Image 1 (cartoon, rainbow, N blue to C red):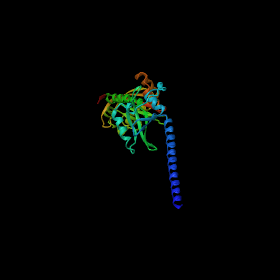
Image 2: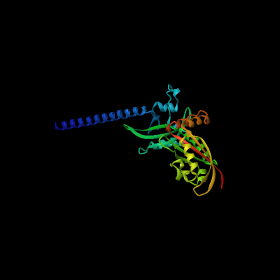
Image 3: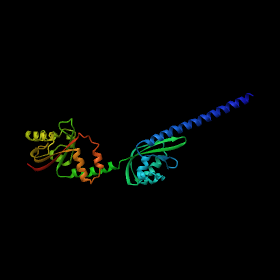
Image 4: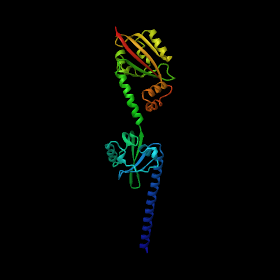
Length: 296
């Protein structure tokens, strides 16, 4: 009788343990399913990949729209992970990292294949587990337009660096009296004798204060403060004591001026315009072109 009682208690404990385990697994699955549902609602392309098969097991509408296109929303085609990467090495990297639960990726820039061509994306990579199934979440951030913008900016910067004129760009907002220098090309440092690190983030008059006559200095300050386009010819004493006659053009530029110019240059390509839209509307850029007329 006592032995039967012990067996009965053991069976009850075993059944209770099994039920508790099943409830725990079910609760965990419900938790992760809720997490997946919330992830899929994020306004970013997201796909979930099985670590065992390396197949995409789920994705949200933003991922589908990125890869397949919005016009194909009724098309329930299966998207294969291997087919979305432009470089096979990127696929191998994801496949390799999916085997290492301690490996996560933040902002890895890769190229993917979409219905609209090759896109540049930043991808984030996170592990998670549902029951005994290991999965990874890939979050994509489409940066194609930003990449395109930086390429254009790179071309313009290369031109500015290789021109024979000295170019200085300063930036002001409504709270500053005189704008601060944010860019200087190599030619400007040759003309003035000031290295970039000596003048960056300093008021624009830093390259004029001790280098031109007081009347010229006051004129430059007045024109900049009044946001007036000006052409000045004046004597300039460089930091090393050399004297030049300079032609200085003061060109005030607002964000609206930049947008109009970009629309003309880029044939209605809005990628750079969208980038400029992130700037503070109070920003004003003063561009100085300085040509050395002769050295005394």
